[in-house]
Amino acid sequence: MTKSQHVNDYLIGVVSWMVSNLAMESKGAAPPPQCRRKMMMQKSLEKQNVVPVKWKWMFSLSQPAHFFTLVTSLYLAFLFFPREGRLTSEQPSTLTSLVYVACFATHFGTQFWMTFASGLVLFFSLPRHIFGRVQRCLFPKYFLCNSLLSAATLALFILHHPAANNSHELRVQIWTLLTCFLSEFSARVYIVPHLLEAMEERMALEENAGVGMEIGRHNPGPLANCPHYNQIDKRFKFYHGICAAANVISMACSTLHLYFLSTRLRTALT
Image 1: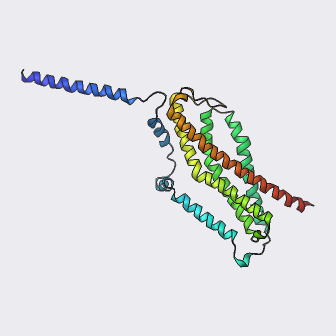
Image 2 (image 1 turned 180 degrees about the horizontal axis):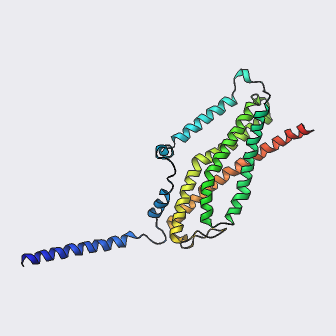
Image 3 (image 1 turned 90 degrees about the vertical axis):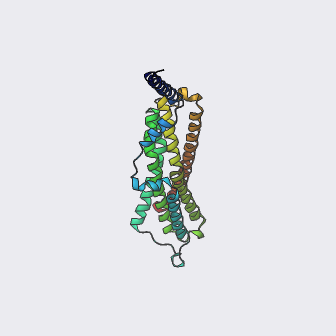
C-alpha cells in the first residue's frame, strides 16, 4: 500500500468514527418525550434570578431563618414574662389601639379574601398554569404579610395585658394569637419555598408535554403514567396540603380572637 492509500484509510476511519459518535449522541440526547427532567426544569428555575447576588447566600442556607426565629422567640418570651415593675395593666393609647385594630382587621380581611375570593375565582377563571404563576407570586407575600400582621397584633395585645397570667380568658387569647403567628411564619419560612420548587418542576414537565392549560381541573394527560411526574405531583400536593392546614389553623385562631373582640365591643356599646 502506498502512503496516499494509508492517508486515505486514516481519514475515512476518522470520519466514520465522528459520524458514529454524532449518531450515538443524537440518539442519547433526547430523553423520553413524557418524562424530560433536568433540562426543562433547570431552564425554568434559572428564570427566577430575582435575588441580588450579594444576598443569595441568605437564601441558600437555613441559618438566617433559624436566627430570625430565635430573635422572635426571645422577644415574645420577654413579652410573656415582663419585669416586676410592669405587672400592672397599662391604659392603651389611642394610637396603639388604632394600630392593634388595624393590624387585626387587615389580617383577618386578607385571610378571608385570599381563601374564599381570590383563590376560587382565579382557579375557575384562568388556565391552570396561569393560575399557578399568579399563586407563585402571591403565596410568599401572603404568608409574609400575615406573619407580620399577626406578630404585631400579638405584641400589642401582650403589651397592654402584662398580667394576663391572672386571667384564663386572656391566656387563651395570647396562646391563640401565638399559634396563629407560628403557623403562618413556619409556613412562610419552611414550607412555601419547597412548595414553589415542586410547582416549578411540575409546570416544567407539563409545559414540555403540552398540558396544563385546562381551567378549573387538573388533567396531566400523557404524564399520568410518568413515575417522575407522579412523584413531583405527590410532593407538590403534600406541601400544598401543609400550607392549606396552616392557613386553616390561622383562620380559626383569628375567628376565635374576633369573637373575643366582639364580646368586649358589646360591653363597650351598651
